[in-house]
Structure formats: structure tokens, C-alpha cells
Image (cartoon, rainbow, N blue to C red):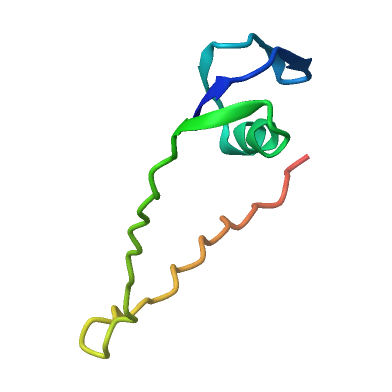
Length: 81
């Protein structure tokens, strides 16, 4: 959100000089505006969100899954000794 500082302010978000314009995260900018330290120059645009939906496959689309055959162990021959 673009704001213009009316007064100089300093804090965890940084130092902001009177008369300067800043593009800040909305929460920081609103704090300055609500406190009377800044005025809004440009409001943020509404974000659009696309939602993609999916449907479960029908019976004709379902693949038949067969379990993999288990590997067999080779039989050990008795040791000659």
C-alpha cells in the first residue's frame, strides 16, 4: 500500500521520513494511517483467486490396480563341511 508520511516515525519496520512516499505491507501502512502519521496515496488492488475444482473419476475411468507379486527368496543349500 502506498502512503505518504506526515511525520517522521521509526520502529521495528524501519525509519520513515516526513514527506516521503513508501510502498509498505498493508498492516504497517494501516497502522501509520490510523495513528495519523501518514495518508494513503494508493490503495492495494483486490487480489483475485482462481479455484480449480476436480471431480472423482467415474467407474469407466477407474483403473484396476493389481498388487505387485512378491519377490521369492532363493532356497539356501546346506553347507558342506
